[in-house]
Image 1: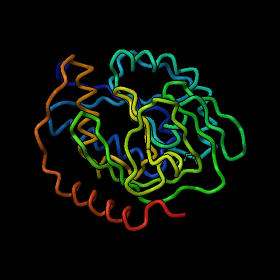
Image 2 (image 1 turned 90 degrees about the vertical axis):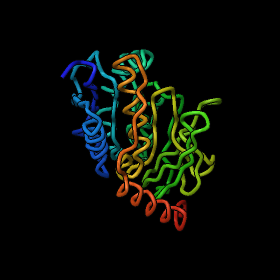
Image 3 (image 1 turned 120 degrees about the vertical axis):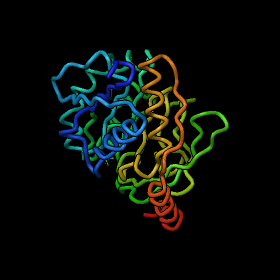
Image 4 (image 1 turned 180 degrees about the vertical axis):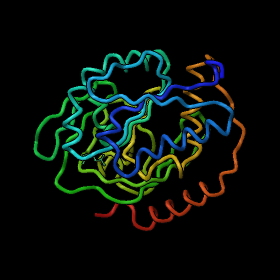
Length: 252
Ligand code: GLN
């Protein structure tokens, strides 16, 4: 298979940050790539490993405060390399604990300040009550293309975006970044951060395709336009999750 049909995913800390089956997001990306005739090459990156120079998409999942604290110093050191790759057009998806640590810092539930990678324009401080439940967002990653994203959140962290920073979406149901701003996640070009677990991508196939397109675009220099796939099951999962979010999301 030629280089153009192979997309490299750098999976950060799967041994530490992988709650709520966040690893499932990689399985969805791999399957949808395969169904479209290209391959996902997943490189796992654990503490002390080098940061590969040819990553098209960085991925990091969520985790408890303890696991975050075990990898935070390594991720902070790795920040400049990831920042450079993103500036070069690579994409990223960071979920919950991983999302928090791509920011400036995460002050955890013990009050310890965990260093962030300084990539996303935000910081996070843990609050007393966890924000748990189904979430529904409205997103517009491409102008005029308004979509919904459904998922599940469970976090003590309250994330504050810097002035002028772009959220991933507007909260239709759920807590989101801090339970007050009405926004969820953060977007910086092709890099997306979110609190949404589930895993996220099986019930939001359009978002998986958006990330795959960005990654393949980085690899080939041309943003592909993917045709539709048969996503009945995914649409059903999205529907069930959306109904749950609207009925009880965002309540302590
Ligand atoms: N430990 C972090 C918090 O509680 C992230 C949790 C997670 O990844 N689900 O906010």
